[in-house]
Amino acid sequence: MPYTRKGSSVSLWQATTKLPTFPPLENDVETEVCVIGGGIAGLTTAYLLSEEGKKVLLIEAKTIGAGETGRTTAHFFPPDEWYHTIENTFGIDHSILVAESFSKAVDLVESIIDKEHIECSFERLNGYLYSLSDKELNAIDKEFEAARRAGITVQKLEEVPGISFATGPCVKYFDQAQFHPLKYLNGLTQAFIENGGIIHCDTRALKIDGDNSMQVVSTNGGKVRTKAVVVATNTPFNDTVVMHTKQAAYMTYVIGLRVPKGSIPRILIWDTGDPYYYLRLETPDFKTDYEILVVGGRDHRVGQDLHPEHRYEEIEQWVRERFPMVQSVEYQWSGEIMEPVDGLAFLGRNPMDDNNVFVITGDSGNGMTHCTIGAMIVNDLIMERSNPWTSIYNPQRTIIHGISDFVSEQTNTLTQYSDWLKGGEVAAINDIPLGQGAIVQIGVRKIAVFKDEQGKLHPLSPKCPHLGCIVHFNSAERSWDCPCHGSRFDTDGEVLHGPASTSLPIISL
Ligand SMILES: Cc1cc2nc3c(=O)[nH]c(=O)nc-3n(C[C@H](O)[C@H](O)[C@H](O)COP(=O)(O)OP(=O)(O)OC[C@H]3O[C@@H](n4cnc5c(N)ncnc54)[C@H](O)[C@@H]3O)c2cc1C
Ligand code: FES
Image (cartoon, rainbow, N blue to C red; front, top):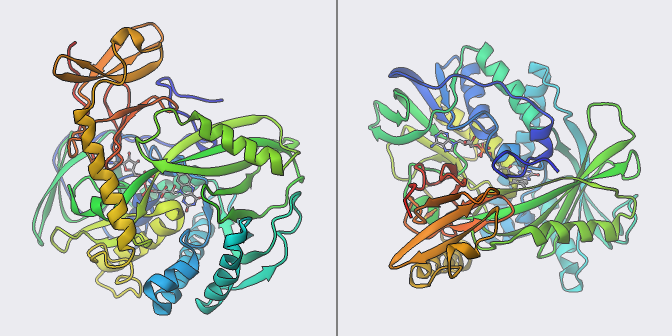
């Protein structure tokens, strides 16, 4: 199984693509639009604006595709709240607009791939939603009817066709899609550069200051003076509180197993369970007699399972029980998704700022689609054109729907602060095994200590620089994860995921 030098998992996509790198920003510059973040949201927005003739500069804290776009499973599917929940929550008008935006996003991706000749194994295929739980059986009927009312082409079937276990009734959604996400990013990057776009990697945005006429993005390199800023950092680093009460950060898990070529039909499958599972196939580029079956699910709030390795085993058990032809596990990886509490992503003007700061976040397990919709909305807002979906995805909206999820996620977050009242997770540093980390209490001080394979200690402040919760060691990814709003750090304290934009300080023992 591939792992990085620091012990993080490597996804199927990261293992099979090399993306270009760009030099860091080293002086002050001026541009029309500064896009922050080199994932699918940032690069799609940058590309669309460069097609409009805008002067665009993109800054990325690490490398292109280093975030969740490199850790996705990259299929385009209906909203993971499903249409019946969206219709129940927001009404039929919303669910029609959501359906339209989802369909237009896949069309846009397909048209960019055609226009820019991007080789990323894009494929249209059908997807099936089934339910094995008796109490949820009418969920399939409800979803079928709601999807039809939203204007989607769907069919109700007695079984998912061509697979080796009995699924019971399912909804068939026509014309969904999948691709190789990092090959797509590679193509977008090249097209953006050919359009005159500029990219700086290893350039972290730290602060945005300004007003409607000009914003200044301060980075660890120089400052960027810009007429508009797009914050496409998966979760916004520029907004300390508001956006982080509207969404919750979850870890989600994937394994990739060999299967004999042709033994599983080329379809997408999802179930309605809790925990849920889904799957897709990926065919390696090189000539082989096997394909990779990519299976995911088993989410939990970030930083709230310290030893999540069992989740890979549970996914493997689930798939082996249903697909006896699966062979060895070739990949396993995890990543982070931002769940909006009312079920719709936040795509548009930033709530707290002037009219020229935009965010793309809250994309849940639908990030391929949501980030593309976000790029379309932000492109139209910057070009001062109307867009039919601005109000449904407006990040400025007050959370009035999904209020019980809002309360339960906020209660969960606030409870995490009580970690400060607890003792250490181990009695002494000696109790930390090689290759593991734990919170140690020494006198009144709490210290996050990682002990590497050679026994060398890496002590860090455990206080998350975002809003002060205590981080916890994630033994599967060898990272320090914050249970409050999803910041994650590597064993040297460097930020892996926001909203934190500064490292955990190194401290002496
Ligand atoms: C395991 C898993 C499976 C998934 N499966 C699917 C799926 O099948 N279909 C689907 O639609 N979605 C799926 N998703 C969700 C989807 O992958 C994400 O929502 C999407 O990739 C997010 O893209 P992004 O551009 O917003 O963020 P990212 O790809 O994370 O990009 C953000 C970038 O911003 C950079 N950055 C962060 N802070 C700063 C800063 N301060 N300054 C500069 N740069 C910064 C980061 O380094 C990163 O490269 C899945 C996610 C996971 C983890
Ligand atoms: S992510 Fe908010 S306190 Fe850590």
